Image (cartoon, rainbow, N blue to C red):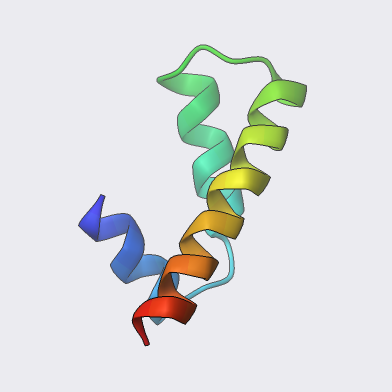
Length: 53
């Protein structure tokens, strides 16, 4: 999880696509559900970085 946080904080763009791909391939979710989950995870990582920094 630290690697995802580092990537999101350093690069930023594309992390939502990464989340979506991981949820489809590893999590077995469908496209619609993985898109919704990725939005939630992306918001969470942005909020955590805002609080941390």
